[in-house]
Length: 407
Image 1 (cartoon, helix red, strand yellow):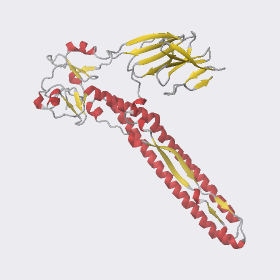
Image 2 (cartoon, rainbow, N blue to C red; image 1 turned 120 degrees about the horizontal axis):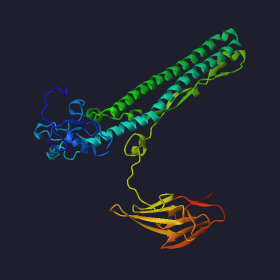
Image 3 (tube, rainbow, N blue to C red; image 1 turned 135 degrees about the vertical axis):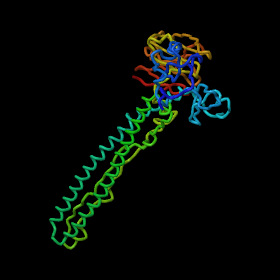
Image 4 (cartoon, helix red, strand yellow; image 1 turned 180 degrees about the vertical axis):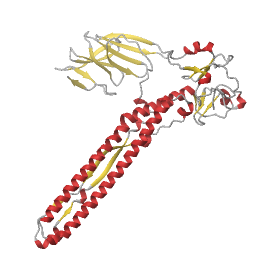
């Protein structure tokens, strides 16, 4: 349907709700009048909005209006995950979506696009290279099998020619047997090649779909996106191929027919080994480890310019050291603030590293004095003195004296 020519009821600005809509924000999926464009631009990132004339917006985008006639065209800013549909405040109040997970429309769009971006990165960095590499290995092994089988056949023929004509029958039997093994292995590898090529083709479709989702502003396109990475979680890893070896044996004339030789079929192998991709790479919540880190909280420290070591005690205490003799303790408050205290090492030297003992008391190393020191109740106790080397501590919880590594 052409939005510019079809008859529509009046649509109003989502901000002032009084003026008729004239502008549409493609980024936020918001209807605006010309007077409210400036105010809307200041929301979020100033350069992150894309505006078009309302009549020029693309079909299929979020209509920003409830589709249920009894709700009088109320604005839809929410999305029901169970029902996979947009909802308004009246839809929520009606109870028809009780116990359903409700999310903001923009949150859904950002989540799906983020998911598509992660899938694209995972496919391009791991899945596709794995399949492409395996496809090349299979082609190489196919050539290898052909060459090796030709060598085996030549050995059989050469050994058969040394014998009397009456053993030609045995030679032909072994040649046929070797050809059978070759055919089986070639057929197996060709089947794997066909399967791998099909996977690569499917992966290309997934990449194209992810690109379309990333480039799309359509709610229908974005919200219908489903990850297919789990289809490819079994990644090709190695191809194990072993060909039969001919074992020639010089025998007497009376034993030629029975003891001419045989193929070592017990070691023949044609197999492609798959290994499952770690679930952490394609499923929540561990998948988030692949994504960009989120800053939860910023803490000011006297060592911000040159921070060496950080150790935490529980969720409300942080110790830091820098390029001086100061050890800073920062206690975090519930209101988002912090209280700082500073202490000096007993020798006045810079601490090489810090950790906590099993009781939560601070332990630090003095590289110049070659000591490991416990700081408890504002008093410092030397736990250990080393003869040489610079002691560095690794943090191992619940060990009273940390492991020491001399460098």
